[in-house]
Length: 464
Image 1 (cartoon, rainbow, N blue to C red):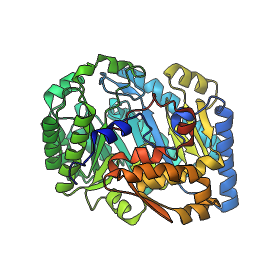
Image 2: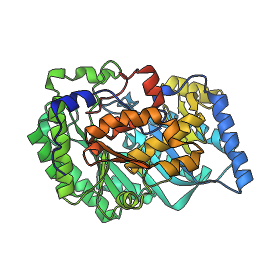
Image 3: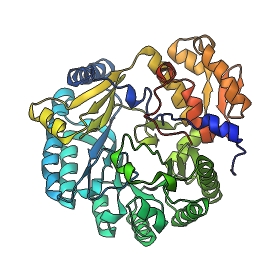
């Protein structure tokens, strides 16, 4: 894949804010009317469903560790900046209470096929604290022997000995936050880490037998140029991680206070960003990586690439995944969960989170019960994001609708994207073109009823 032939007019038209679609409806649609009582009912419905169907699919678990020792200016995650590591122990006490509430509601030893620790910085926890957390989770849930168990690693907080400890705890996937290797860019975003430190960690991970390693990169950061980012891409390809996540920087200083420290004049222009993206895709593909879609690449033998080829790719709150979209239990401050046809999110501040648990209540403060229309549109949007193709008949049979009738307006709107070369339409399907894969969010947005009705897009990052 080479740099796409994008006209300035098309670029201007597509360069608007829009969701990343790790869920549909997106988290901005969550409402406070969905709280702890509604979440408890969703868990109860899961238990009743298991009784009727002689069991349900295994759970996924997500645990949010919010603490970071220093702030990265680009970061939009929910975090607590502190050098006081003694704050971790009482936080784990709260996690333990939250786990106990779930066990009381759904029963002990529920099977789990996927566990992910995110943040913040999960490696803020000491080895002993990670021991405690994993023991807590293994006692409460039946984590499958072949489960996918992953942790996000800040290279500044880990060394090969720590990776060995992670392996001993059962972690089999590691995700390293790199963002950019250029020292000037690193200084501009307050995250300085050496290429050599990341190289040593990846080499150690391979020697320790980790199933998969991932490197996160961001394009569109201050002081980046096409040439400097191309060099970072070259360095990452030489390191040979199993997966690469390539994200566009979303500059939303009105929402995320640390971003106010970034000088807007140092940010690359939209055309420069699309050049970075195109060159990165070309570099990764030339190095043998498969383009999974939107923001992920994987080596051909990696399970993510295999799932893409076999049409088994899924997308959830952590991005692309090989795991089916099973019920997800979110643990920790601000964690998002999915149970049945509902989404939920925990309190976003530590005080609210711990107060709710201190009162014996789930710390859920907002969420959403999906309507029939939400479920239908989610199926279409996820097919676009994961397979790059929507078969009208399969959607019609699964949801008992007439696709052409229900989506008549959307099909007309797609004609404009077809004329721009982003999609191909025929009587029975929509297919995203090679060019359209750069702008798949724009294609998915056509089917987003919530976005079309209120047009309140400024809370999202821009598509380019």
